[in-house]
Length: 237
Image (cartoon, rainbow, N blue to C red; front, top):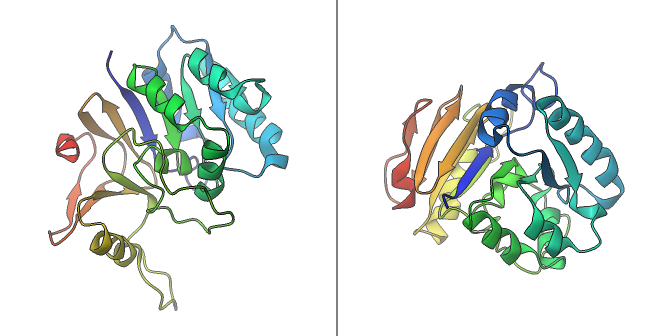
């Protein structure tokens, strides 16, 4: 079985409807045989689970799939085991990671995806596909049991990556923050995934999709920038 992931930077581009630019990629990725997907809404606070699920389901129904939320399942582990595809949406990565540990489904999801079940994540959902949440942009609104995440890929992602400076702002740039991470975690590669970009992972083959470039950061090495539809297989090495 081939491991298959679609890791998306963001759900919505400026001026577009929710998940609009991702629809053809999601449809191509999931194909026609899958009819139902398991949605994990834990990146938002619990009071918003129903609303978030409905919002995602509206899009997936348009594409020919029904999105059922894990928060409605009596047994979360069994829901993962029976899933035809797993979808994790964006929001707060700390809360998402907290809930993955709280529900004790990290190993279940990892085993399921490693066995060939398609995985789609955007924003926080892409971040938790990595070994750790430490390249998130989010405020730590809750303390997870661990920073360990799903470890579906061996590199880190920084979603919503931007080189654009904020006017009249003297804080760290995104690049500076990533380099701070690498100075303490030198063995990692970090993908600066710009909005409108996504990674298609098939086993150890990685293709940049979408309409934006990405930047690759490594400790004590020049920053690399790549165009769309290019192979990034070296991220597995």
